[in-house]
Length: 528
Image (cartoon, rainbow, N blue to C red; front, side, top):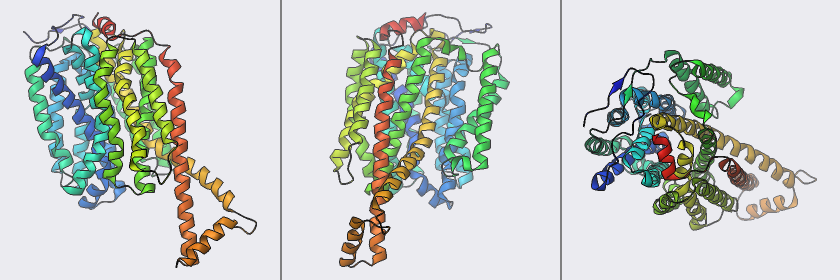
């Protein structure tokens, strides 16, 4: 079968393309595509817990080491929305395979980096070439599965997308503690090689149609400016005390002005690099809103939970990661069943179920106590696994419902870009909101502790008891203050969990404003 034809039109020809794969070829290719997604998502989180180790080994401060994360996020954030244009110009298969191969090479370069500057440079390269991997795997999975099995395709994609962020901190912490930090990048080498080889074997002759289109240079430059400014602002804002820093203020202004200019340009340019006209479709617009907010809440809670366990409860990074493990295991077990349900029922029902279980999980966490057992901490995570098993497959199905087949790669890239930006906001704001809640709780506790003489009776009794145990008055007072701060941070975390439960429930009406979506019907609509 010949490769894709290239036309001179400004839009891709709308043909149905090759028939779906079957049998062993379908299974092997689907696993290979899932590996590509898993590798990219894993790499975006695995370095988070390794930053102190990397910074120490390279002889730099932890704040400098965080640029290992920021550089990847900025480059990836810029490249993801370009996916639609690249795949339309060169073909989905070629772009995906090139992305996997270059990502694997960039991973090797990161592992052999000899100082912080070269590591940041290679992380920029890694983030830039990884942009098409997630939307590309999503589009290809939908292409190789028959219409009545679209739920299965989305299930495979969602499992890797949701489980990888949970595995990242566990694996990163173990490798940093027991092997050496370069191996958080070297583990990508065999995975990337296997993924590229199997995809090349399974997708030969299945290239999508391509079309010539002018490069929107102005749109690209504006995209680089506002996304770069936004990502740097979000990643460095907390350490710089947010808007008390002139640098953060300037970055925010640049991001806002650049975004407005980019959006106006893309709306009126004849050959936009990102097609914002997709938001005219009701399901795509509302689906993106729910997907982004829901993912931001999920991501923010996933970030806050291990942070609280490590800083306030005393858990090591590995054990804090294990607390989250039940969510991944439950999601993997239930996602195949959720896929079958998606093939038989309205996706809005599954999306509603996911929001209910997300809310239940967050509410259960709002009942935590500082002396709870490991299993008490892990139980709500298992409940969240139920939500995870239906969230992505339902929301992606809703979002892509009615999108013409040739525009699916671009729609996938745009929705994933929006999701990544939402995750960046969540990562930056989660700890800031937690600190604000903690400050309010601590102020309230201080008011309770203050008696007529400046210290309440119970506090004075606690200090005296500490004195009887051999501590000095200052040490006793310090112990009391430590307990108060711990209680304030616990209260702040509980407030955060409770607020999260309310927000996800509030998303349910938006889901039902979307059109009825069934997996097979959505595929037919997308293939027109």
